Length: 433
Image 1 (cartoon, rainbow, N blue to C red):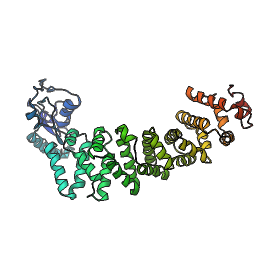
Image 2: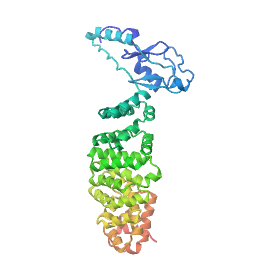
Image 3: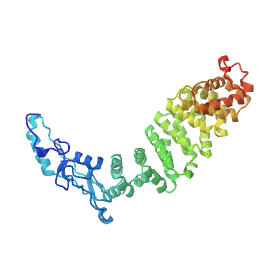
């Protein structure tokens, strides 16, 4: 800038910089809005920085509390039960003086400060009116959802939104019969972006009456949606079942399972596959769910994906799910029924990660314990499972994995120990009974 001084009363007492949005608090001192809001709301101070006067008064009664707001950024947010006398009032006169001074010194490189937007008061009346207008005119549905979402993402007035039924309103669009598919897809996209609000999803599956109505609406979009819609759908299902009760978790529909398995089968994106596998990890502890997943063909799908090659995290998740499915007879039968099932599981041992090795050894342990036919034991020798297990007990693995490998080798030593498939340098490590 040129050789001139900024008038002292144009400078914020906190930052000592030219004020862009001057505001005055109840002590009569003016500050730049960003600086004083950080002082109060981020640093949790309750005194005036200049006068050091305390600004917290006694709690107000509930009736008065309902109508109080304080300015924050672009919005006005309801205050806490203790009324902080932090009322921030825009100093329009000083702002205009600063703008005029900036214009006067424009030739010296001083930029004119913009006029701040008028704050929107986000209270029960505002949100209720927003939803009411959208219900009366579907033309306002999109803008209403966008407005609610922007408030959520900016961390604004979440409690007010919940109390006014904003999330229930968006949920009604998803499950309602009177809305076109495009509105339902927009509602699904909405929920895919509010991952940090656990109570929202708890409320949604309760407010929809039968929680299956909410799930079925998502499944319908999974069946015919685009890549992005299917990704959003399986992501929201993760959020829903994360807060579901045991009854809801243990009784998922076959239609939902089939669509989730189809996402994995088609491998439309790594993100979608990851969300789908994570969802099944949550659902598979219940036996009835495991059987449905096996019936949907996931065991063969996972074997094929593992053959083609997945990244480390997806390989781990795939083996975790495969381990869960091998906990039932149907899953084990499907694995040994695939020509490459045992081989691909064995191949992942000591090649991906410790987690993958642990799960792969556990899967083979289940096979060797419950499906130990002559053909299966012969296949395990031919594809190198026995040699890999001998190697596992010599290298760095978890103690539980080493113990599983030893138990398998001991259990079938009469068949495997005499096999020419085991290299001599590994045969010496074969555990004795």
